[in-house]
Length: 443
Image (cartoon, helix red, strand yellow):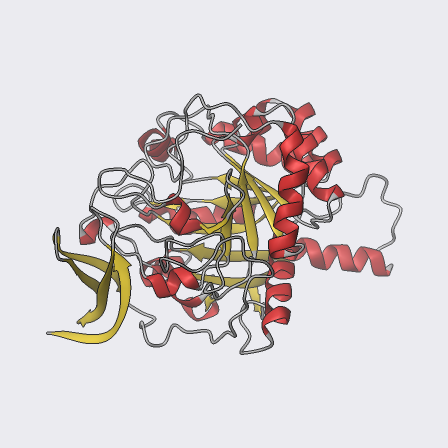
């Protein structure tokens, strides 16, 4: 029996017009139901299983952007820039440094692989300053395409550090990081803190299905090279039903086997935009509660579902652990990610610091000068023992909830110098039409 539980607003998957939407309960599932006057009714699975929809809350205080680059005219999501109606300051700003890629993945948010010219290096100082104006010293992700195809990526990292951004991360498939150790060294010397490494499973059958070729050996080499230079690695699996949902526990165990070089795992259940804009069936969705349940079951209780806490509304979870010497995990409270209401500016600061603290590499001792009784040794040991599990359920045109979108703190800095929530920037209609992403660039 279906029961309406709340209302929101969404977009039509065909024309991208704003339309009303309802959240309805059907047994242990929550759906979005919406109807476009022109294109009909659409239904999308939002939530399935435990923890329950109602129980999954983390109260926060709205925090308006420091500077807004667009006016409120048409209403969400058509005024992104950010506008004054957005509820959250930026926790991480993503810059796409190239659209080129050395893979042709079946699933790709950015639909990467084109021949667009890369933005020139001399733009980046101005871009960083624009981000600082809008967001303050937020965390930076350099993305693409595949960022490591740029020879000057170390210079882009160094420019960001010079402009006062304390944490810079590169999103990468790891191919070049595996094959070019000198390039990894240059990135480390430029100040790179972390690599968000595409890592979908522990068997090459997964990579053949999702990425078109066998990649596991290269992933291992990329992890080893980053660890050698003290660059933290976060494994980032795209979880796709029927392909790798049975490898979730194996991915966690793999990460622990390669800890402390690997700092944790960031799970991303598949979303249907970019290169995969078709309307998904229920069985093609993998919701956050299903992911949380799978982590506990497939790790045989090494990680408990109750230890994975809401981070930003219905979008995500995060939890911190200490890896004990016997290989077990001890859950620790993630200050700034799992606490209750607090002043908005302090919450933003703590969230940024939490991510940086979790994902950064640990210092590699070159000469063993510190004794085991020294304070520096003990602090570094504690830092190296940290391990994190996080997850993010990005929205697509089928399940887009504008209340969630207004609460987003993961933002893309666009080539037009606007700050746009990640799900809005990557959103595509069922015909592949983008709301914000442009095929050509202004340089």
